[in-house]
Image (cartoon, rainbow, N blue to C red; front, side, top):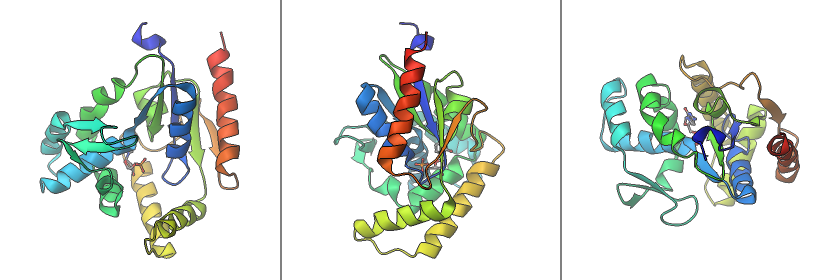
Length: 227
Ligand code: DC
């Protein structure tokens, strides 16, 4: 099978829209591979922090990105290891989120992660989750889905997730963090967060997971059965 014949479905959008949950469920239902591109940026961000590299030193960050030994799924589904050490929890901390968004704004870092992302396109197909999957990394994907939700609703969801895990949180701070990250991800000069021209936008503010999945499955089935 030629690489360009392998189907790719992209799910882009800001944090807290349920992208990860939808992408994971969709890949499982279709038996497709899954690319969580945010995890790549998170690993790079954490690796930059570990190595105490200055965020202004773009060449050193790009070099680090090219050499990262990242393994997905070694310690179970969704797990991420860096050079043999499991960092699944560390990449989901506030520091991991903040560093991911900062390294994601560096053009040389994005370029350095490109081939790794393209390599996920393997038979029988790929579901790719991120910010620029449909606009930059897989521009020929079909369908391209873009999930959004109001920033208040996304902060509320994150707040509930943290409380459910027994972690104390302040809603106002979560709202501010999300707004800052949205702004940085949307206003960067390279691969900014925005829907592709041919993306289908689903606003999940007033939808539950089952309702979102139903809409997504409908779009995917139509696209995959189209001649
Ligand atoms: O999807 P996520 O919340 O795990 O992503 C964390 C950060 O990584 C996000 O704030 C911006 C960056 N990112 C990116 O720049 N490009 C992607 N394709 C995915 C994530």
